Structures are given as structure tokens and as C-alpha cells.
Length: 192
Image (cartoon, rainbow, N blue to C red; front, top):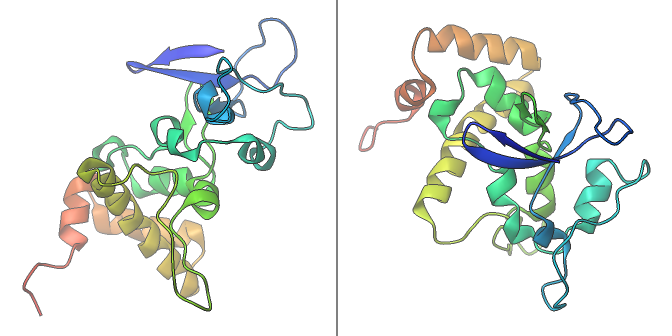
């Protein structure tokens, strides 16, 4: 189902049966159909057949043939689009909810599958296949998003629960916007 929301068109896989099923917050936001098609095959781009067995992120990921097309549908929003650290963390850990449309996959799973990773023995890595390369805007969006993800993960590693860590960040943030809070937490260049 194609759905227009906030000036963007999203495709959602409705999880309830029927010819016109109602929205649920568990409906899955999908990338464009070309992401599921072999780029060497000249057939018309179309979605695979979804059944009750493959309506989960693991199965959807296994069907994707062109991860470079995922950024458009699943990228994190710009920092200013998040009203708080909790919703940014939710996009990473559970998947961002687009009200009236569905839920994107957890970005941690997307990045585990197609992100830049280093081999644990050789330390040689690969470029992320789902994020566009040599694009300053993409790099900035991802870097600012990861800035907060890493800080929440550090708090979790230090023994906080996610709820405690997020509450602590919100207390620190006060009435600052997310970009202001990022600037506040960012180490000053040249400062030692």
C-alpha cells in the first residue's frame, strides 16, 4: 500500500488480512520494489510475494538484492526531526514508527546487515552498502544519529537500563532542541 505522509510517499506492508486492511503500528515500511530485484535481470521491478511466513524483518532482509536502495526508505531523520533522545533511540533499537503508515526496521539490524564492519581478526572493513557513499549530507545525518546511539550504548555498558539512560539524557537536554543538545555535548574543536 502506498501512503503519502509529510510530503513523502511510503510503501507499507499491511499485516492484517483483507482487501483493504486497516493500519496497525506493526505494518512494515518497505523500500522501493527495485531493492528486491536482481540488478542484472531486466524484469519489471516488483515486490516479492509476502506471506505470513515472511512478514518479519529477517525474511525481508533476506529478499533484498540491492541494499544501496534502502537509505531512501529507512534512513534516520535529520537530528532536528527528533523531539527527544528517546525517539532517536527507538529508531535505532525498535524501528521508527511513522504514524498512519507503519514501522521501519530497527536501524541497528539494518546496519548489522549492511553497515560498515571490520573483520575481527584482520581489522579490514568494508563500506556500508546501504548508505550512499561520498555524500556529505548522508555522512552528517548518520554521524549525528550515531553520536547519540553511541552515548546511550555507553550508558548501557556502564550498567544503566535504557529507561535510566534516556531519562538522564532528557534531564541533561532540558529545553534544548536535539541539534542544540548535540552541539552542547560535542567536544569543542581545539579543546584539550
